[in-house]
Each structure stands twice: as C-alpha cells, then as structure tokens.
Length: 115
Image 1 (cartoon, rainbow, N blue to C red):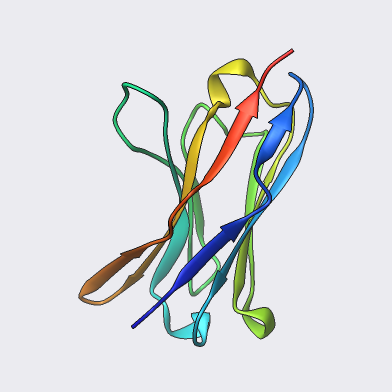
Image 2 (image 1 turned 120 degrees about the vertical axis):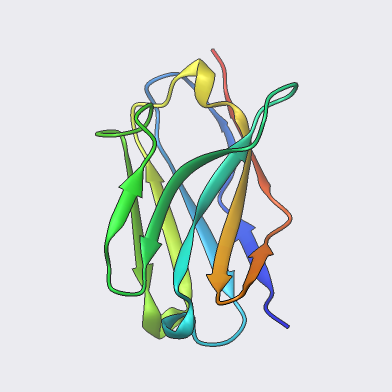
C-alpha cells in the first residue's frame, strides 16, 4: 500500500513563497506520475502540477511561471516550490501518485494566502 504524506503548508502573505513536500512510502521511481492537486472551498479539485518518472512536467495555466515541481528519487519525495503566491492559491493541496493501474492520494496540506 502506497502512503503519501504532505508537509510544508501554512499561512503566507501575497507575493510570498512556500515549498510543499510529499514523502512517499517505497521507491517513487516506480511511480508513473506524481503530482499535486488542490481543492478550494466550494470548488472542484484541480490539477496544479505533475511530473513523470522520466522528469516531464505539466502545469496548470494559473501557476505556470510561479510554481515548480521536482522530485528527489533518493529521498522518495516530490516537491512543489510555490512563488509569487496569490490569494486565489488558497486551498488544500493534495499529493497524488499514479502507479498503473492505481491512483493514490495524500491527506492534504492547507495553504492559505492572506494579508
């Protein structure tokens, strides 16, 4: 059973930065895709960024140029560096892993952008 544990969320002012971490049980090298989704109150869950085991990345248009996803296979960890945070980035951020044919989710970490 894969377990994903997020950390790094918190309260930050607009324009600030946070780095989220997702530590996975087992080797992430075998994961086809890992990434981050987010869900704001009253809104649907949406993709933020994903990275394949080959290192290819994909981002939501709303975060391009501000967020960077990366992975450290030695530490079995995926990161999301979030810069220039905006009020609308406030959400619960969930780590995601896809290992054919199964999908796994972390419990989520709250990110609040507020002045």
